[in-house]
Amino acid sequence: MTTDWAERLPTDFAFAECREAWRMADAPQQPAAASSVLLTLQQVQLRQPGRSGASIGPFNLALQAGEHVAILGPSGAGKSTLLKLMAGERPPQQGELRFDGRTLAGWSPAALARRRAVLPQSHAVAFSLPVALVVGLGRVALDHDPALASITAEALALAHAGHLATRRFDTLSGGEQARVQLARVFAQLWDAQAGLLLVDEPLASLDPGLQFELLDAMQAFCRTRGHALVAVLHDINQALAGFERLWLLQQGRLMGDLPPNASALAPLENLYGIQLRSVPGEDGRLAVLARRRVA
Image 1 (tube, one colour):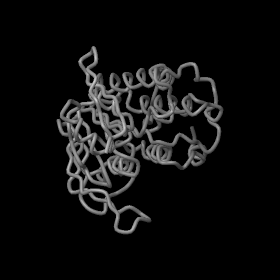
Image 2: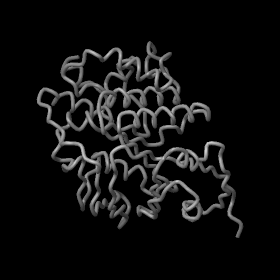
Image 3: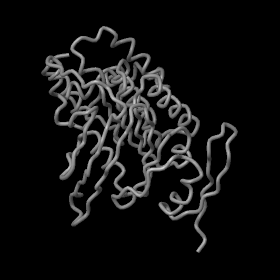
Image 4: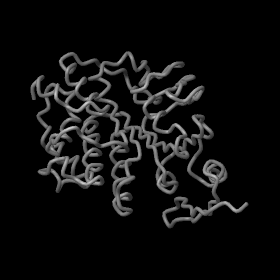
């Protein structure tokens, strides 16, 4: 790669982050010693642009290393904005975020990119790129990466996208693009420990069978490396299947921080204005059937 080539990369958040991290990779910053508390939000609040008086927060949250958290809430509740706050894409007007004991501002882009990866909702790329290169962009914070080719291939395989390696990204369907971008964040954190993976509706454009497979892949990927996983989801059953905490958002406020068990059913019903009936699964996990609330 050359600096001129990097200047032509797309300008969306995920690629801009990678591009800036690549520029600074010649002066990496050592991460702080890992602790059980990976990320904290202290009185974090953000005003919503274009919405008079609207804000999200304040949030007081602590995320442990290795935890898996699902963010749930109706459309417009602030789920994606909270994820952007946690990623450092949207700086708060009030409060402080600390990642592994340091404020986000105290991390160089290269060092942060080696410990924290973000999968946004949008997978659009401004111009055509080979799939393998899109996945390899997750590794640009490294100034020397002899394992790039093998990690790219393994990350694509884990995301059930190995057969797409020779394609160009702009020729893929929405579901195929989602898998390639998931492989990119896998590659980014492939050889890191106790990192943070933030994903926004990662399964929305996939068929049901593939949703189960990729949810298992994400959880196994994070579990074996000690990564925390925070996922914005719309499917309640996906949130109940393997996540340890549920963060319930409504109108920019945290309405609950709950375990994924029967105690969460009533708050979930209130959150969405529906009725839920629990269906015990054979694996011991709770599943639910939703229906319209009867007046």
